[in-house]
Length: 218
Figure 1: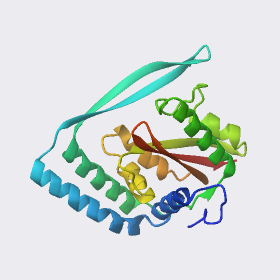
Figure 2: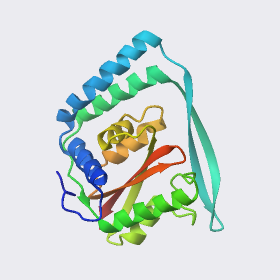
Figure 3: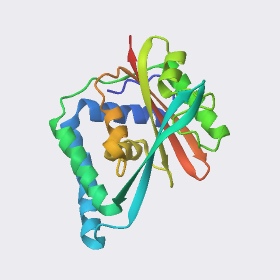
Figure 4: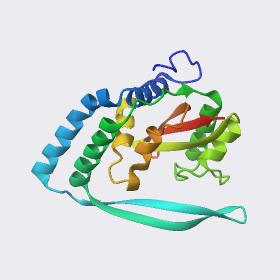
């Protein structure tokens, strides 16, 4: 499970995040014990405050035109803060209850280079690039470029202030409150992945930044 323990190119925080990803993948039912306090707190807040303020999440879909990225469509999802948090945690716990144990992921230096490259690119652009690089590259293109033995890949991006632990970031992405389709969650729990890398971007533009990169070996 602790597959990154002896990897020299990762920081301790990055190693801890890979450990946490492997923990939830390999022991989904046991992980419910970690999530129960989150559900209890969310249910208490819903009871005290009601559904909560309306928040919005935006999902932007891009398309390539003449070698350049352009916006294809923008979906806006409205939700009530406390109501959605409870719904998302219950949904996650149901998913984990039904999930067969998945393989643990091995660290990969090429995937790490893809993560670091995009993190440094983000830093130069105030973390405003989302999943597309300043060269219009997609997560899969970057992963395959730096790790050619991978046939596909994807990434998660997380931002948090104040600084959170690797476990808290993984749980944030697993719950995925307010995100249409819970895409970060299903990236973490995708059975096709074989390899992983994480990049801790530090404090930039008022938020602590994280990248998680996943790959499937050929």
